Length: 294
Picture 1 (cartoon, helix red, strand yellow):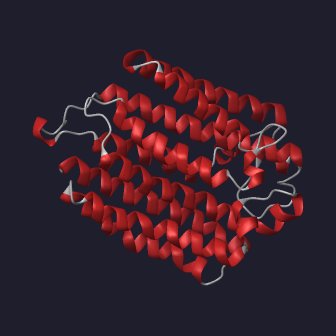
Picture 2: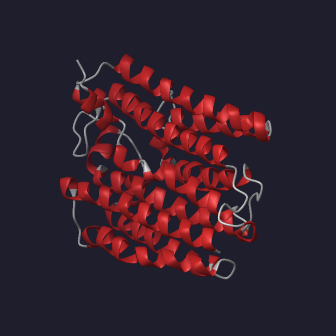
């Protein structure tokens, strides 16, 4: 019987900043500082958007676990626990868990769609389909090197911009810049995993972007994804000067980048996932505060 701890590990909690940060940044970007501390924020909408983002993240993680597991991609894996690949959970149970979390995201998104507009139905449906078909279906796009595109679009642009969109302030250039920044950091999380798994993914026919780029270029791509958000902070500061607070996350980014630049491989890259998630979380918190202050 699968234990609670194993189910929690299968949800891959270290990746959850990828769901929470864009909601926080998008909500803060929609704040009107002239309206006081709250800035006109409708709090229940922010909370609903957070539930949607986190539920989609967890659902996608379980869906990935299920689909890779039944294909045998995870049979020889250096990374964190995979439920199906390790045999600690039945594939059907993991599949149902994924669908359950997709349902949670759907119900939370429904409340936003009713309050804001039908277009959110479309966005939500596309997000769930993208989460499932990343490694699911007969032709998963994650096996074609498009996984990073999915993460950047849905856990960067979509999650951030639409978190701003559901607020009275709506989206803005600042929201879009913030979306690109957090999208880069979310993508860096995936690149960390895929860099570590190049040997096993290549052997199993999973042609991720890392497999296509190769080890050296993947490390360069990871560095770019960590550096670009700090460049964008300077641009955002032209409208919201306090956004420069996010530059204080630079030391965390350096710590995450150091083992990648030094050539760490296999299990030595596992701590990089946690360090990248920490960088995203610190950056997101500081940028949220900065955008909120103005």
